[in-house]
Amino acid sequence: MVRRWMRIGTLIAALAAASAASADTIDVNGVKRSYTAQLPAKRPAPLVIVLHGKTQRGADMVTRTAWPQVARREGLAVVFPDGLNNAWADARTKAGPALRGPPAGTDDVAFIAKLVEKLVADGTADAKRVFVAGVSNGGAMAMTLACARADLFAAAASVIMNLTDEAAVTCHPSRPLPMLIMNGTADPLVPYEGGRGSSYFAADGFWSTDETLAFWRRLNGCETDDAGMSDMPDTAPADQSTVTRIGSRCPAGHDVVLYRINHGGHRMPGFAPDARFPKVARSLLGSQNGDIDGAETIWTFFSRFP
Image (cartoon, rainbow, N blue to C red; front, top):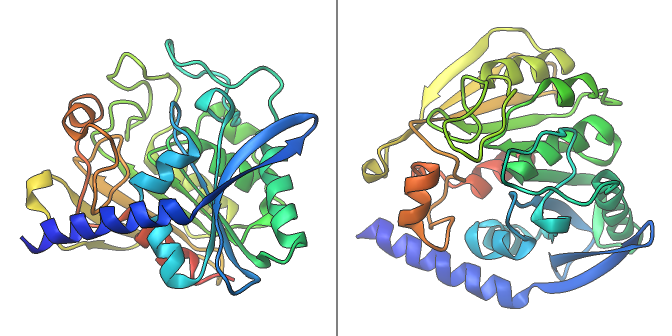
């Protein structure tokens, strides 16, 4: 009963936050790009860029994640950009058989960079505390941004996404960047063990999560082995999934952490449903974990940097 009221409260808070968010546009190389922003009264503030998954828009992240209420409570600026064709032009070129990507030539690195630079220049964002987090295709874009523009961010987070050869070979960050990874072991689209997922919509060529974790550890100068493994409390047994946090031994400020969602699907963990039709989402994408909230967990990680 307590968890039910927590879910209802989270939904009410998300709807209230959505009404407080405002839509805007910015010109990027002659293309008008749109985004939704929720800005605090006290500025400059820490800024979190939240990137949606393929087929979604920024507005979906407003209503289906806890980022709006985290931002209001913590005094953050949070921005939800929109990908063209509801997708991001990350470092991969193979998008899956039935899902269209953005138009050829789309430069989403330039879009996000210009958006960050605008919000820093107008006094909204603290340049030293800018973060990026993404889900699925947005997670791939978050890693692409960490690779291409590490100078802009204090930390990054990627949810339900692994690297590919294409993404890795082009990844040359200007400096180590703290990285959080959050992946499900029963993901039908981005398989935890790598390769091609079981879904018809899955692309091929994914690295495993272990390989992805090892890659970021190498870039950040961390030791190769796990540094502590802790099982989170199973507070939502009905979701049939659990969470294990896996740390790394890294130089100060170069942290790399994995939240492994045991039996979790291609879903953002959360205390409220991440989809309009939860039963359909469960059948197509697997279980959504309710033991942790993705936004809350990511902000706890981000808040330590710089």
